[in-house]
Amino acid sequence: MKKTWVFSCVVVVGAILGGCNKGGSQNATEASGASASQAPVQPAQSASEAPAASGAVGTVTKTQLPAEAGETLRLIKAGGPFPFGEDGVLFRNSSNLLPKHPRGYYHAYTVRTPGSTDRGQRRIVCGGPRRQVTECYYTEDYYVTFKRIAE
Image 1 (cartoon, rainbow, N blue to C red):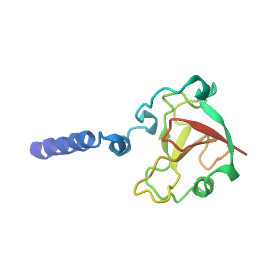
Image 2 (cartoon, rainbow, N blue to C red):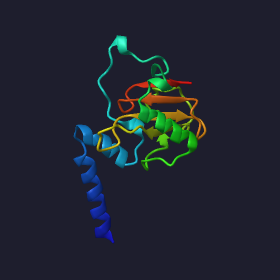
Image 3 (tube, rainbow, N blue to C red):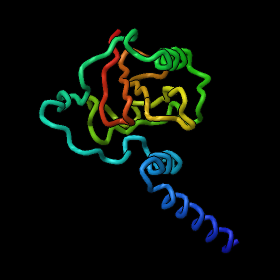
């Protein structure tokens, strides 16, 4: 029993450390069950690129989104089924890029990326009750910047 536990710990630590290269650290964060908001920190933005007070950089209309984002919004509204088990997980907003709300308010969903062999970098984060798409944000760079999805 003790050997099995030690072996499991070694495997988990090895997987986390092995995923510390550029693309792997994102996957290790997701695999560990950590919040997506704990993604690697990116270099600081210049003053001209600074996000608005809420962290959302402007807005984007649904028609300006990639077709895959429209499909993700449709699935959110329908309550699924989602293509990835991680869809709908808690988004902690620990970097406070989105407006502040109590823990559990935001949930993250994958936006498929054509040609990608994994979940890619695109996500939609929605706030409020499940199946509600009135307060959603789109990110194409894995939670570094956000755009509010306009109605």
